[in-house]
Image (cartoon, rainbow, N blue to C red; front, top):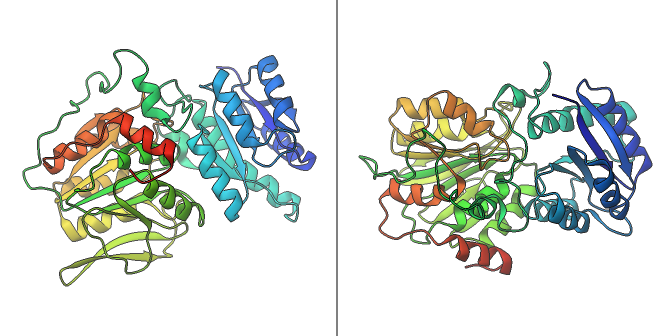
Length: 403
């Protein structure tokens, strides 16, 4: 396998230099070109055919969002990693970019950050994501992403608009809703005891996967939902707001002591672990700053362990697309209690790290394409009502209003 060839797009000459310096120093990665705005980037994209693109959001002439829209028309399979600032504006633009088909994002070095710190930040964030998205292996000492199954950003996962990964899969005749060969079937019988809670873990590719899954569940869902998506502060709040607009459920970023009730979805805030605790007859969110697990806070393992303690086996856990192996150990605990675990399949995952780790460990009761997950949730819970159609969900996402 040859080098991962990267096109670096940023209006800052300093940032372009830092990113190129870091990537060119990495074995198996090379920078094949740079561009200071989107128009130049689109020209070089055709000329150079890179394996991946790093893309700044704020640029003159043609910004990152505009560039991404044009890029996805001709290169739907090329991994694109956005460079984002940790601000309200930057987070909002990043959430929008993810809905338009960006593969992932990293924090952009600021002009006030020391050079050595900027280099370290880019190396620690960007390199593992490039290797994982492009199917390579991370080197020792980095995030454990590539120790888990990974894959190139494939056709089924290439989001060409708000429809995201599921719609791309559905466009391929004969593939929509079909599980991977040898995987358990998508239709599931209700569990012996109906789950009392639904918990979901996701990372790379998760925002759009969550939009598809939550958007496919009915308002009458008889259980509460708790979600961990690997994201920093601000981002998780904006993600919750966006998901609430595209879902019939009540989606919100979790706050300390928020109550979990049927039909409500609590998303772990950035930099806080989310646990579910019982007080009397009520269920509540407990947020902690305990050390990161799997390099993550919030971590899926923390959430999964907490619901295993509270509910035993009366849990339905879903592990969606994501880099690394977060969720595997928590799923192990849940399985020993008799809970049911669903995993997204490789063909519809942006990165088959987290669900791949659960699957290869033999912990998944079913391995499903993304479009089959909402129905499998409904089947597992034994709910009479069917999930909304993919078309209805896509229409809701496009309108940006609550369906």
